[in-house]
Image 1: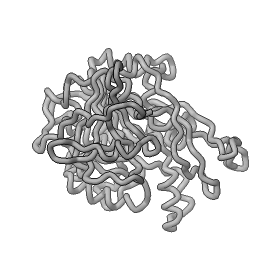
Image 2: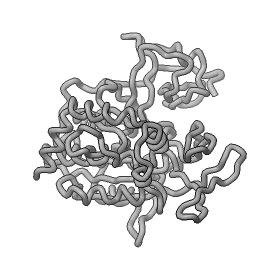
Image 3: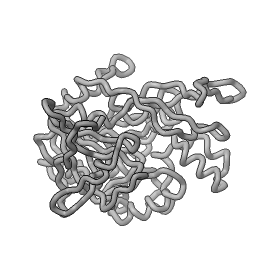
Image 4: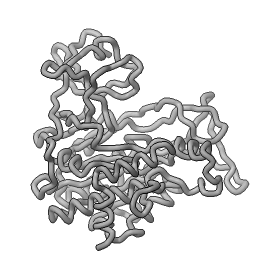
Amino acid sequence: MLRDARLLFPPFGPVAAGAKASKGSLQGCAVLLTAGGEGERLRESLRRDGYPPERLDGITKPTFPLGGSFGELGSLHVNLCLIASLCGETGVDIPVIISTGPEGSITDRVVPRVPDEYPGCRPKHLRIVAQEARLHLSKDEKIVWILRDGEPEPVVNPDETGGPLSALARGGPGGEPPVLSWLKDLGCRRLLVLQATAIYDPRLLPAMASFSPASDCVGVGILRREFPPDDPFGTYVVVAREGEPSRLVILEQEARDDRVRALRESHDGWYLPFNTGFYALDPDVLDSHVLPDYATPPKVVAPGLPRSPKIGYAATDIVTFARSPAVLAADPKLYAVIKNAEDIKRLARRGEEMGLDRMCRTVLAR
């Protein structure tokens, strides 16, 4: 892929230290919270830590209580409180889309209840969208089955990171218009794509919404001070070939070479930024492109089952489809993500440091 190509540092700008929400920064903005993952790693780590097996059935990462935080809220609850607080602060009604796993999945059963549990943080404009299902295949390409109440049931996966984006172009149940049409009717010009399994400093969302207005897709990246060969994160880089337009792409570990890892920013000597999976984009980008398939690294999907990849849509390619993409360079302290049981208390502490505990108390007391 990189043969005969020039590699360039991507256009980027940092989150301003004093970034604050305003009507101007959030007007015309909507938020997609991706909540489709069933948390196999979290469930497995809780099992190893001796968490009672009978309490593992209904667990999803975005609804699992952050121990020690106000009200033992899950990260999805915290994010809805954050958006409600930004709405109250700026007078802007921010439409929210929450994506779940496939119909019948744990997240499809559990996640839609969350906005109704705390009316104070329920958005005025809300859509809940289920991703399509993919059969999970073993390493030898056999369909994986589990027994549920004594009956065999095929294991299915959501359409991975790009599944929520692909779901926005489909019509909803009962003849609902596609989310993209719904957003257009509401006058939304910017869609913030966030993980419901992370928490965010209140400065990050307005910075994403208002950064580089001429860019139709902004990816949040973290600049590196070093870039070892085994770094697992997707990497932003501009690829230029003679006679072709330059393209900002995200290269995964197996596609990189020494030239990619050696490329540095000229002023402060940063290495290339890595992808967080958070994007701010014009909905039109999704309206005219179909995301390609992507195979994840092998993952655990059930106890005792050998690891095997999941197949789904690749969200990272949305950057490649954009006409004028850019990178928002953020401090990694502006967010924190749940992956396993060890992260639960860490997120509770980080939420308090970001002021999210206090924010949740205020919102839920209304």
